Length: 104
Image (cartoon, rainbow, N blue to C red; front, side, top):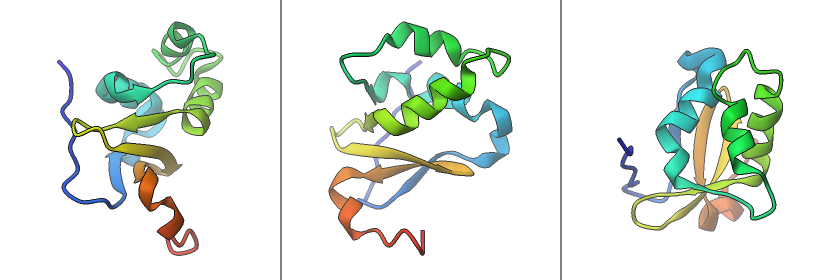
């Protein structure tokens, strides 16, 4: 079942909290994979396979790649960058310039 996401305002939102521990990447994929905006030049199925279990040797490399290269959209079509500092955040693309990263 597809998770529905629609943010009420244009602020950063937590997608997966840190309580998921080493399962954050796996949980993110399970909940938000339909919303990921993938670059055209990557083997998406390999990334998804890598993130099925933290036991996979490429689990963390694939997660780092997603954080650095992918965006997500919500049901309204708004685009968000991914950011992880303990929790995984969705940062609105159009608000990136306004964020004071020292206070985030």
